Length: 129
Image 1 (cartoon, rainbow, N blue to C red):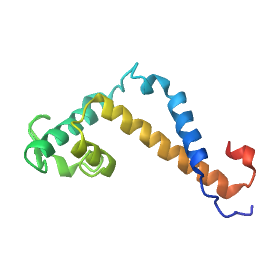
Image 2 (image 1 turned 90 degrees about the horizontal axis):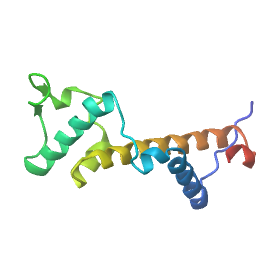
Image 3 (image 1 turned 135 degrees about the vertical axis):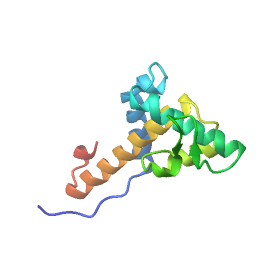
Image 4 (image 1 turned 180 degrees about the vertical axis):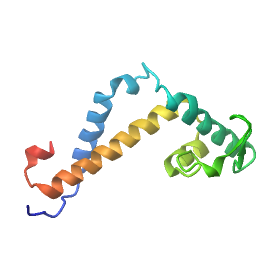
């Protein structure tokens, strides 16, 4: 299998990819459902605490609201070490809408990566879209 040079994504293709992501996840786009299980029970409260801490006191070292308290920096999967979640928590007061936007942004980044991978393997434009 011969690998080709990956082609760059044009603005038109990026917009089409973004529309496909929004259309395929229309129930999240229009906030008809919420993310469940670990997302709503752990990740959303941690991100909301991060946002509150950043807007009031600075960097959150300790979260006293989970169990008997947990260090925020000890969790690598948490919001403190995630640059996208950290920026969203710093700029906005984090809520469920920000959480859904972050989720859709991850899907868009993944779709862009798959597009680049397919463009690396083939030159067929129909295979890309």
